[in-house]
Amino acid sequence: MIRRHVIAPVVIALVAGALLVAPGIVSSRSIPTASAACPAVEVIFARGRVEPAGAGQIGNAFTNGLRKKTGKNVNLYAVQYPADNEIDVGANDMSRRIKSTMAACPDTRIVLGGYSLGAAVTDVALALPFAFFGFDQPLPPGADQHIAAVALFGNGSAWIGPITNFNPLYRERTIELCHGADPVCNPADPNTWENNWPDHLAPAYIEAGMVNQAVDFAAGRV
Image (cartoon, rainbow, N blue to C red; front, side, top):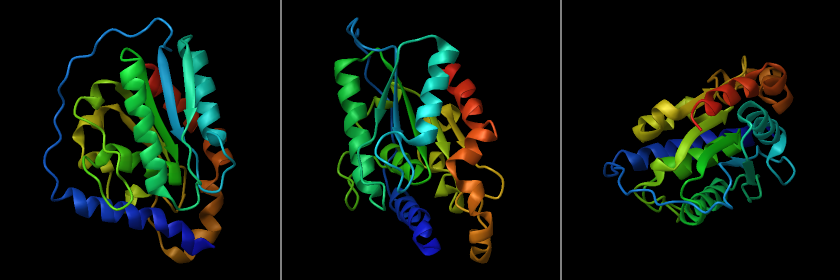
């Protein structure tokens, strides 16, 4: 069971290798006026591995907190994917939602988020400007103009370094949170994973105030 949790860091490492030969990512394109029916903010959140369908505990808490903090109309889209090991499926759905929101509601500020496996989903959606393995929905140039903030919890990319190293467009608008000795985001001896696993669970992040920390970060950018 523990071994399966290593899959996200391995996939992220493969992504990093692919990005070493990727062309630079540039931002261009002006933003047209949005429809009055569009929300001020849309949170697109990918839940953690084996959480029930939806945005998960952290995604729901984060969105509710952002609504209270900003007083704005904040819509929540829960990334649709099995949340087992299918990072590419989740990244494709997240990317499609970003693109559809950009087209239908160009003035809506997009906030991306992910917990555990969902953080890896977000990494792939943002970092890859080209198709790679099962990921076939890269974001177009100019997408960064619509994405106001990124909140990642328990992200396995810590094993190779922040994905924002490969796409610096999002560096200043990304918050990465790792709770205590969470072995997914805090590289450690695999023999300690079982003992430290409680630090990775969603309630631990919520009770530690890390969701509120992410809310404060995102609220200042929307």
